[in-house]
Amino acid sequence: MQAMSLQRNKIHPHKYSLWIAMGSITMMFIGFTSAYVVKRSQANWYTFQLPMIFWISTAIIVASSVTIQMSVMQFRNRHMQRYKQLITLTAILGVAFAVCQWIGFKQMNDQGLPLNGPASVSFIYVIVSVHLLHVLGGVVALLVMFARAFRTRVRTYSPVPIEVAATYWHFVDALWIYLLIFLSIAR
Image (tube, rainbow, N blue to C red):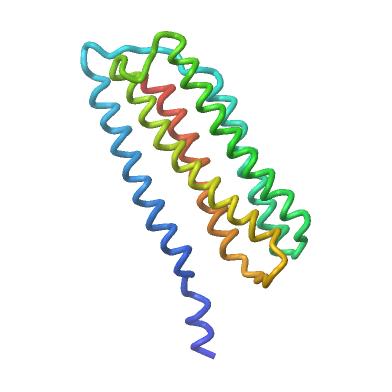
């Protein structure tokens, strides 16, 4: 009986690894935002408005957090058809988020704010691009989940993969909200 109790208190190795990775990613973005604050105090700092598309992309990534959470619930309830639809929708929303970010970069460039422009502009490109790479990594994971959901061979019904993917997805969502608010306020 005691062995079963100990077994239940252990965190799955994949979940543990994810939490370590998210801690590392968090520290990286803390470093980015700290450097931004330090650099901002210099006299030649250039302020500008972020493109509105970044706010639109926020609505998209928040919607994707809702769809992935719903997909977790559908998976746990063994409603596999609905799970497949929701995991697909989440991946599509992730790609839509990435497209919005690219459009935001294009709008910045069209406004005379290129990557190699003022330091404040370069910071935006770097911070948003690194976040976008993490989102795209999540999209790849979602595509793997999508492929597994549609295969006809051996299926396992362990919720761990979708729970790990959902936790990561919520993390990049929260990280984006933090970054957007930070970059809007700390101009």
